[in-house]
Image (tube, rainbow, N blue to C red; front, side, top):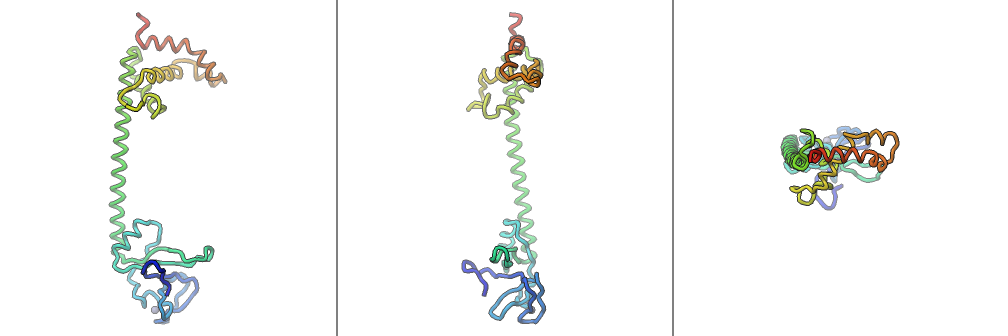
Length: 228
Ligand SMILES: [Zn+2]
């Protein structure tokens, strides 16, 4: 008897060497399933297991459900020469049980997918709300900012500094520093030679020194101070 101690699973082996069924005498070539009893190795037909279908391992949830759904099931083992132990290859279960398990798993997957989509949408909405609030703040403090630009700045800032600048512990408030930081970064990259200077090999701080005057000029204008 080749049964493991901890459970009473019916065990079926995949034969490595050609053998013969001890009951009906059928030749069992390598790769066939056999069931061992006190009499010896029997073919599945003689073991009354031939109405079951083979479900190879690989999907734990499917296997679990198929076994649960099947009145009669068996564990399929094969001897591993390299590891020198029997290894689980799959199970035998009734075709109906496997089919039902497949349907159950599908439902489960669909449910999970639906939940994933819902969670992502919620995240995206929160993100969008945040970007819009940030943009509104920019518009309030920098009324001279070119129309529409505040969204670009806010979007970039929120992505770049997600969880850092701007997004303080309470996401409702944006520090003035965060807004100005985002604005300056935007102006530096978009409205000055900063990027070109960096490409030419300028150190970051040298490049910033070079464009500082221009950045201040634009900040002032966007703040609406140039006419004051
Ligand atoms: Zn037989």
